[in-house]
Image (tube, rainbow, N blue to C red; front, side, top):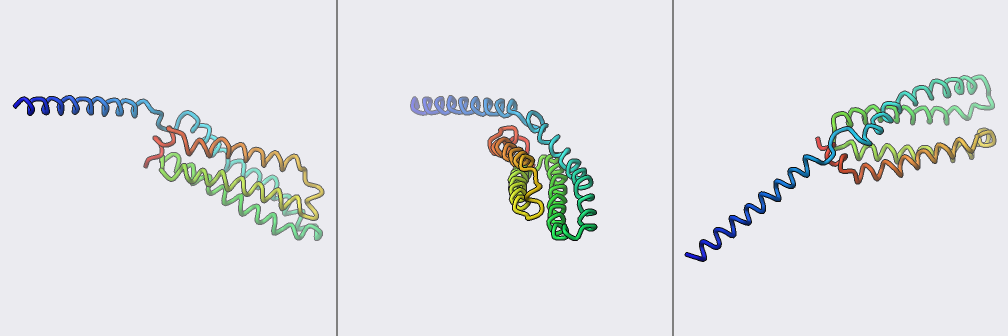
Length: 177
């Protein structure tokens, strides 16, 4: 009988401790960052600016360039390069819209998709710089400083945001749907 009494009370104490631990975990979960706030606001602003920047770039840079290519037979071999760049920019533009939707829906796909976005942007910037610098017409007249600046911005974005989306508690708590 005494053994039953001791076992019963020990189980009761153990249950109380487990309830206390569960309550602490719930309180901790309630106080952890969640939602589109903090650094995620900067990501959202960047995603909203991206399509605008790409559209302005395509209109102001590629339209006159295509006109020059059309009027100058020496630049005819650039047409494929410019068209490829326009296609890639259109893909990034559409991808940015998809990312905005995923972010606002708090989709669990968003962190993985934005990491792919940042890495693919870096690959594109590097490939673009290599192709243009090795082009017989564009290479000699290309401003190397501009290419390095684009590469630097993309490397910096990857160095900041890729680890953030992998490690951040806010990201883990926000993108769950």
